Image (tube, rainbow, N blue to C red; front, side):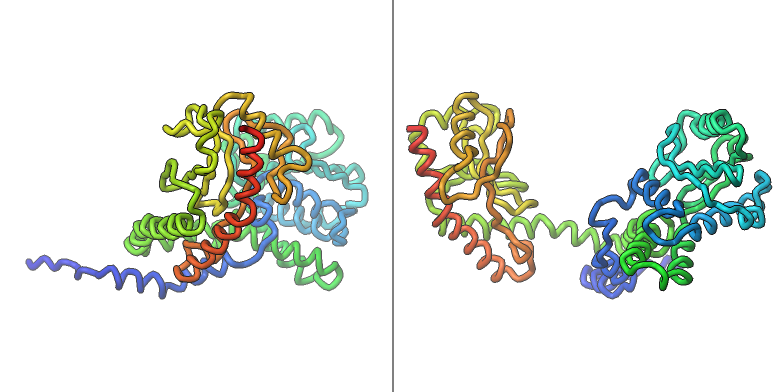
Length: 406
């Protein structure tokens, strides 16, 4: 039997396969798409999802939907309950509810969302799980609390999760209706389709973004960014590993541009200590000041005051390092006082940090900085930023420090 080995694939070929993959294009589109929830970094935060759902479920909410959303949500839960033989609530019963006195609460009795409707004689408790799991027998405890506090109302417990997971306990699974976030996303789509013309454009846009957020970050769909990224990496591991290996070379090239620009356009700033993440510089014009040579636990030079450029922030900062408290306070007071250093926009702070304190910051690397493919343009940008800093802020800062410390 002949053992046929797979043909060797060249690095160029694996990279071409990655570039031509439609899934990569899809991922790029998703990442480029504006979404308020991504901007606010709340796409996976459970309390924010609960607050938003509570707003939608409140007939008196500013969304202008009235009882439309809450009735449809409860109807979906009733369908799921009937399919699993849980409780006695049916879609017909939900349709007959008035919902005119419904009260919506969050974090009452530590329950994520509660819907209390005395005229319809029910209380719906919703335990919402986005990025966490059950713990401490909480579902049993919450239901017991509701039955005790609202003994005249029929409980309607719902367990809302990204994929409709049932509660761990058999007793809880027999009473809690499992719902998946896909139902919420579909309900948002339905709401926009049937009620979109009756609500404001702002609310409609907000609901559309929320539905996309659920599909991108909460649900297991083709729009889920994390799952799509894993899928792409699985198919193109060799190509992506090649790109990751190239990153240090790109950073080294960027540092060459920065250090070259610093040497040419800021000649009195000299190397102190460097790593791959940051480069530190000292000023020759401050070298004769003994008070600035008493730093400790920072660099081998024992300098107390250094300029530092971090690659990931792209900013050149002036840092007071660890050292004698009196000297550190004098520098802080000089630069941070109300009028500061005339002509220099410094970084304000209410008090001096105990170890490292940034008193000045200026951007050096922009969007067209050294990580960009066009290194000629990057070099020009960096040189301009360093030249401006060295000609304007640098002499004012150094002059004020010399006057104060000598």
